[in-house]
Amino acid sequence: MNATLEDGGSSQGIWSTDPAITAAVHMPIFEKYFAPDLPLVDADCGSGAQTVFLAGRFHPCVGIDRSAAALERARTAVGEGAGGRSAPDFRQLDTADPAAMRRLHEELGDANVYLRGVLRRGGPAGRARVAESVAALVGERGRAFVVEAAPESDAALAQGAGAAHPAELSGPLDTPGLSDLPHISGAPEDSGRAPAGRAEHAGPFIAAGLRVLAAGSLPLSTTDFEPDGSRLDLPSNWLVVGRAG
Image 1 (cartoon, rainbow, N blue to C red):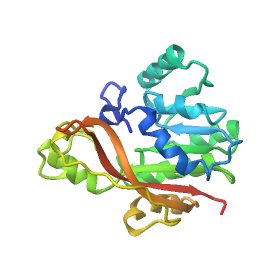
Image 2 (image 1 turned 90 degrees about the vertical axis):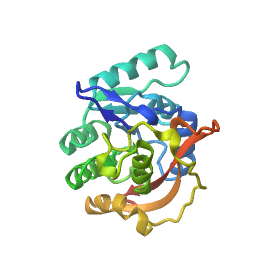
Image 3 (image 1 turned 45 degrees about the vertical axis):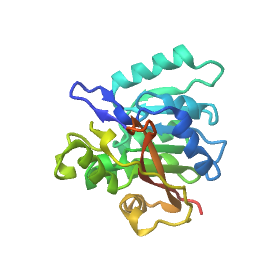
Image 4 (image 1 turned 30 degrees about the vertical axis):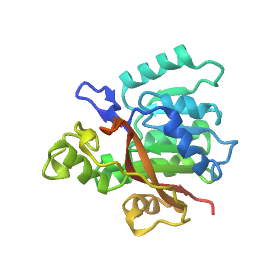
């Protein structure tokens, strides 16, 4: 989950977590739905940390982000520490540009998509464009794993930042003051459908012609910590979407 800066750069802030507590937690959920022979696109990849981790399992792996500065940092990190992993390919592309995603699909073919903390950063029109982009990338065989901070996180973050309402936050789910929040956690669940609380996330993908193949909830780790030293986790909802049943 990235916050775009005024200079066009990207700051992942509290969401720039280690893949060991992010993509590695998500992978057991989505890998049973993803065809292993398809490429994977890490949408809005930011620092590329999750992309590098995912490239160890999916080939080829492409990280896309609209921020040139973020991609430069990602390429530097890969060059310095990729080790024996298969290095991902980083591209400056906007996930909210369906035409660009259709061109990427022409190059890659059907692909799996990892989409973390992107959908709720735009209004209804932005969410529709992202969903259309995902639909273009997955084609007939691909799947997308979509994970977003749950709506109740807005109020919690606003409280921690001293805001009277979530609308007063300086950016979407990216704000200081998190150490004042209560610790929130829970076990993952897999219901195979989109419960009412996840309809906000599912709606744009259904409108784009995709089906919800699985849904659930799990904690979303941040880089902040509680006063007692435990890591701050926020509630999140996840979906697996695609065309095939």
